[in-house]
Image (cartoon, rainbow, N blue to C red; front, side, top):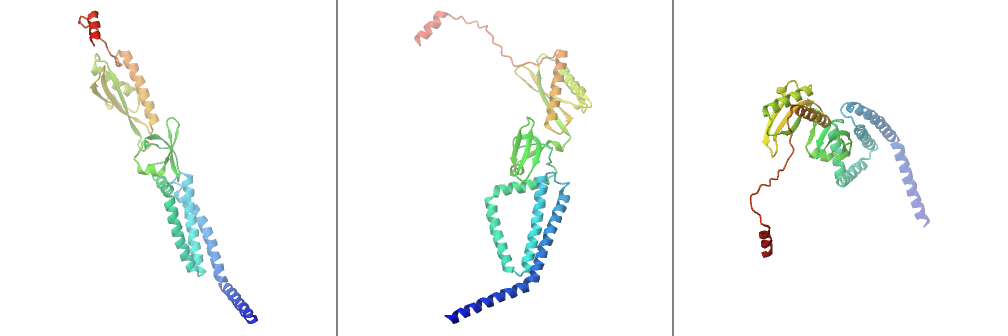
Length: 300
C-alpha cells in the first residue's frame, strides 16, 4: 500500500514538474500572444476610425456607420485571436474553435433569417446613392419623405405626418419610385366644360392661365391640352404641364393653385363647369284610368 502511494505521489510530482517546465518554456510564446492581442486591440480601434472616415461621405445614417465600424473592429480582433492561438501552438484548439463557430453561425443564420435579411438589406440601401434621407419616394403603396434607414427598417413620413416603418427586405424586393431624383414633375388637371362652351376659347384660356400662373411655364404653347370625351353633362379635357418640384407636396400645391386660377378665369369669362344633372321629364300622353289600375291590382 505504501509503495503504491509513493508511486502515485511520484507520478503527480513528475506531472506537476512537467507542467511547470511547459509553462516556463511557453512564457515567451505567451508574452508574444499577449502582445499580438494588444496590438490587435489597438489596430481594431484605428481601423474602426478609419472605416468611419471612409464611409462618412457615402453613408448618412449614424447607426449604419457604427455597425460597419464595429464589424471591422471585430474582424481585426478575431484575426489577432487566431494569430495568438497559432503562436501558442494551439492548432487543434484553433481548428475546434473555427468548427464550433461555423456550427453556431449556421444555427444563428437559420434562426434569424428575417433579421439578417433586413440587416444586409439595410447595408445595401445605405450605400445606394439613389435612395437618401430626405428624398420623397413611393413604394408598396406608401408615399412620403425618407426619415431614416437603419439595420432593421426603412422609415417614411407621409404627407399627413404619419410615420410608416417598412422592413428593409421589403424595400429591396419591391419597385420604388423616387421623386427627388429629378427636378421636374408633371401636373395633370382633368376638368369639363358645358356643351354650349366655345371649345377653342376654353383651350386657349386654360393655356394662358397656366402660363401666367407658373414661372416655369414659359409660354402657353408649353401647356398640353386635350379634349378626352363627351361626358354625361360636360365635354371633358386633360391639361398637363411641367413644374420645378422634387416631392408630391409641391406638386399638390401647384395643382391646387392651377385649379383656383382656372376657376377664376372661367367665372370671369362665363364658362360653365357643369356638375352631373339628372332631368326627369313628365310628359307622358298615356291616359291613366284609376279604375283600370284598381281592377288590374284586384285581378293579380
